[in-house]
Image 1 (tube, rainbow, N blue to C red):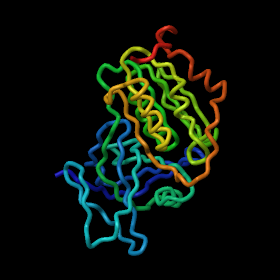
Image 2: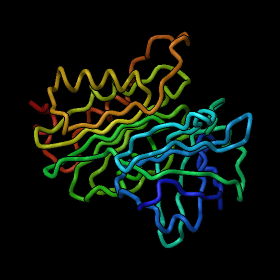
Image 3: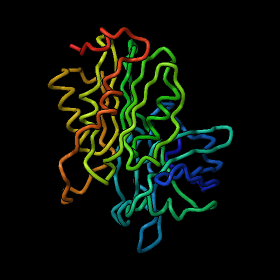
Image 4: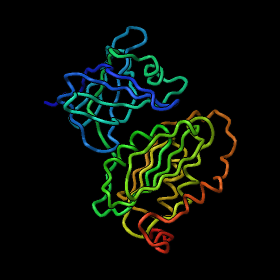
Length: 285
């Protein structure tokens, strides 16, 4: 039977930007790690109970269903993207957004080589149809690791528009190269202010050919884009994967989202690389 859990420890820690740190986990158990190979595959990290210090694990069936042990404290876990899996090195890279509060961000900030962790078997969601000719990849900082890995694995002939929203300019990262990729960066959202990802999506011209839309961000812009995709574009479910990676405290008082800056809007409205201008202006029917 394939292992459900893997005991690992931090072997390396690297600050990618002021807002994100990468931890490399290693362990002999990872020789049998069952990676899905899917770009946005994710797993859960399991943290000790605050009172007892015990790491409480759920019972997970082969189908992925969870049940809990009645005689144990609640399971403490957090979901994160597998940025890279190296079978030969028995290593997994996981990128953590650094923010105030939260068990995972707090743990990652203080973790050092040798810090121990338990992770589980990964799953993935990105599932473009076989006829995909173009894709839109959008994310805030929490979805950036998955977006980058998807981009690394994207075939060179697939036209790709990337939109990433980070809290501040210094949180930008170098994205994997792709011959038919155009990237636009937005500053905002990410718990700092209202997200502009939904406005950015509605600004993008979409080709009339077969494509795919992937979005991973805070719940509110994801919900808005989902409504637009279903009701306005009328895309079938297999043409998109729109996932809320986190939920902002709805008690926070936010100003209304600002308008997209003119230069950002111009970049979003630009024709897709490798297509004729008149085709780029067409919307899916």
